Length: 223
Image (cartoon, rainbow, N blue to C red):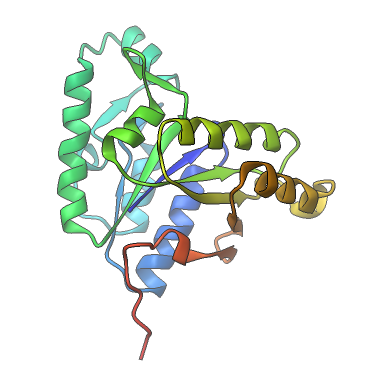
């Protein structure tokens, strides 16, 4: 299992989760599940993966904490008058996590926003990753500013004692339109002491080192 987090909101965590989920399920015949612990601004991300992976669970199992407004969870809880304690939040998420991780051979867990997004009572998204005790992969973008955002995300996760398996670049902009993107990628790997394990351009055009994220799943060769 893996926790996909991002350098920011809108870097394409759901898009990459969909690409990887489809590949593992339909090309590698792996029984793949999906969990979106917290979703703000509707249920679209969870519904997309439920449909893509043909999951039978109800949406409230795949997404135990749902917030109507596209806001940081701590703010959304307040403005929506959603009265729930941090203990209850963690219990609801853990219940879904335990159920899904037992049922599926591989579980994709997708965060909301970046690693320092507050959930409640100074409990951050990175604390949720630590609470679930699973490795993470950072979804980033190739655009200007990504070096800073990616290196800060790497440092934050490592300071929390979280195993970071690598970085996947989601090309929200065409690579050929990004000036010296190769140098940007080299800088992230060098200064972050990390490997860029994948580049996603679209559903049919991606290159990912699946061995880096399938550390506990054996892929059997097709006949």
